[in-house]
Image 1 (cartoon, rainbow over the protein chains, first blue to last red):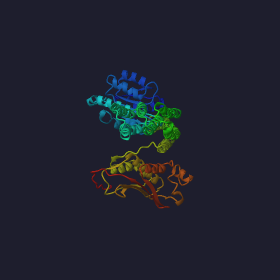
Image 2: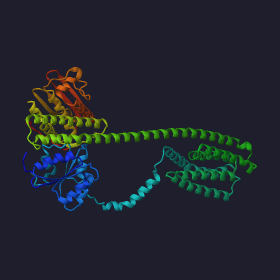
Image 3: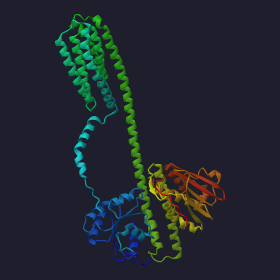
Image 4: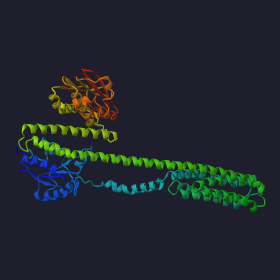
Length: 134
Length: 469
């Protein structure tokens, strides 16, 4: 599947599960995005500052620094309050979605992620926030 | 992004001093206390209020009655002292009563006891007529009763003994009073002391029992809460732990099927498709098991919010249409012409009921149609009806199909697949919404599942006519 839906996008994927990172990276880079990865919030924050990604996908429960702390740090740092951040989590209990949106995330995708529809799901998650997407 | 910080409204600052006084008042008058303390405080208040009314009356009466009974007693100085005494006692007793309503009820009761004892003693000393002594002992007994609230049984007996001793002293103080005249009053003292001691000991025993019961009860509640929390935690963890590996399995399989891992030869593609199909099945099973577990743990909340029923039916039809098309089944939604634009209910759970019923219907229908409808039964009752033209359910199985992990028999599970939890979830959810589920079926020609639920129509909602397409 060759396409360039995400040409020019710089996506940071933060997850402590290497498999989760790999599979998302494969789909995103196949769509033309440049993907940076990090295994926890601490690393994610460093890479965010170095690379200034245009979109961040982060797991919520991670060692060192979790997704909740990461979003706080990102929102406080330079350029961080406008970067779209989407939470990826395997917690699918009711009320989680509200908690995620209240935590400052722009959207929420629950694991297992659907690779077939990942780009569409991201798009509907972000809504009007990213006119450049797709 | 909108700022999420909230500022303290200025009104709150203005209110705070009144609020603090209110808090202090509450702290003073509504202390957190044990059953025993609550009982003591209640009784202290009861007795104090009785004494506040009776003691001043009694003191005034004791001034007036001897003077009528014995006109030679006309000492105005003595009378003035009694009036001061009565006023002072009333004042102190009023204060003591007020105290008895607060967390310092013990002080209130103590002051009441002292005032009664002292004033009674004073009255008797200054006017030791047998009549007065006998009427005084009644009131002394009330003091005893009050003491019984505050003191242990042993302390109570000491107070009774002192009381009797005090009565025994009177003949020594006044030669007019002989021991013969005070016998009834001493007898009365003793009987009262015994009755009070008995009732106090019974009350103490009852209180200990109540205390123990309430301790056991709160311990049980605490343990149940801990157990529930652990169960919740376990469910949340299980959900997370099961989904994490599935995320990789489904993800990589989809990546393969998308061709992102290179060109697949037909055999590998077919293998990947089977992995994908089965991992989706596993995911559905995990979701169903967790749903059932959550329902059984009482952790599913039914929300009652306005939703659009026509939209709900449409979205269920949309999401299940691909499966129907795959089996060449007609999927029909019939909209009641009187269906209101909005209803109050838990749209997410209703959708779950519908999805499970329709999935079940399609599973057991090889040809023909599955019809979905929402019909009004009465003013507040609605029925979700799913009709299929499938194989039907034999009579012996009609009772058990709503049980967990039940399908008609083992072979049917292998032939039709599924978790066997769908209908159990439907029934549990229907019960949670104060509804029920029924099935009407004839072998070979199909089944009709009807979920009847109370759903209110929000006020001011217009009925809409929506033609089924």
